[in-house]
Length: 245
Image (cartoon, helix red, strand yellow):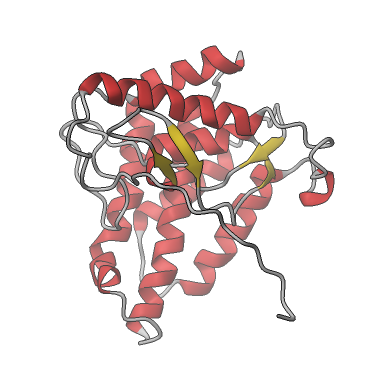
């Protein structure tokens, strides 16, 4: 073909977004959530050297690279003022935690990026969308997961992501974090920072998509809602930070 490529295996299962498969119980959703966290801890426990991934990315400085790269992207696409984005960015840069661990990270680990075995079994059958995987701070993966985890009474997202985690049987964000800590033995210091990073990051990425939509480069119907959706994503991050702290 003259270009790098990969072949994906077909996995028969469900991807959770707006609908939970008929026949799924609340107990199934609780068990599935435990398996979801277990799968994340398995990613973070991969031996980078044995897997031949030592050269995938630098071993240090992940958090500052993220801040620098995303701030540069925001400055490139900035055509309107989004106060919440600037507030988040200032707070993130002023409160960068010490990176205590470097592991393989997925980069986009959330519930609609896994194939599940429901309703037959509450299992994780495959993990999708690895294109952002790198070596970095594992708590960035956890913060991303928690940012996208909706609880009862919270608004839906302006982009098509999993919106069912507010249903009975799913744990809270705090319960998910506690399960991760129990399985890994890691102290979850500064989790509000990692959640804020996730919200700031997705808001900047989606603002880039919104500007492409405004320029007529893409016509995805979802992007039309990002005029109010991007500020909402940033506000959600600020609200979650306040609630977590």
